[in-house]
Length: 287
Image 1 (tube, rainbow, N blue to C red):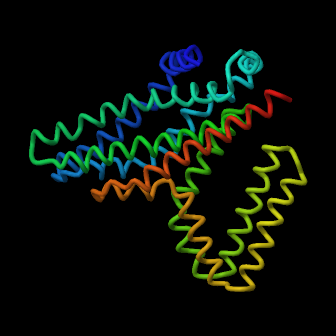
Image 2: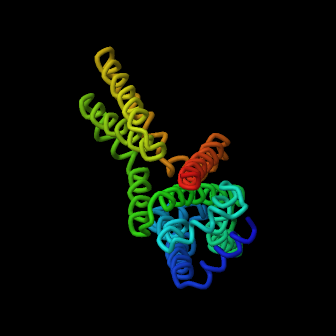
Image 3: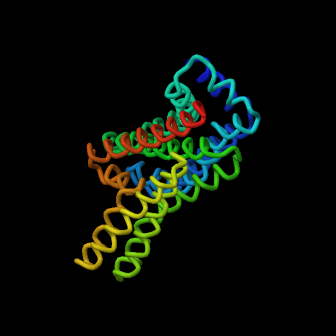
């Protein structure tokens, strides 16, 4: 595991992509840090991190797109999967290498509240709580990207899929407000979600029976719920969209509240997508 981790870290820091992504993230952070904190005098550094969330939609997929896709394209994944290393160790090594790259801007972010303290009073608990939440949120986005890199050998496809999912998560709040005004629209959105879950089951198991059963059960339950109480469908959609919103829990920390629920949520997302990545590799390893 350590050898794979070192190789991945070395590859990130010997290629231009790693430095370009880090430089772009630091550039955007510096722009908002100057505008909000230094020029306008806001003491909450979390506002800067909030305005750079849109950067993560591009940063994380581009960083993770080559994790497994490049291995499959060059056919070196066969050597990796045949090595005397557990699949979970391979996935953790790849994931931790991406987290190491994130550690560079994270270290810079940690110095920003100290700079602000030179010019006035800064609430360090709020600022560093927001930085900690940003790290967890970014790790969750990286886990999503690593998963999509494991399911295709095309880096562009992996990046686009990761970007699409993160964009959907980012826009989930606005989508919810648009479709919850109509029970029919809510049913349509939930039906799409059921079909997407069925496709995921098919891809992970290659079993049409299981995929059809998963999607069919979801659609039947959705129809029964709609006929029984259409308002419940709207509530179910709101709950579903809230569950995929990776960015909403971060706002709690910006407001000065350390939310254990949000921490558990981010850790759960990380574990879930790393587990899916392991299952994706296991299927190929033993086939």
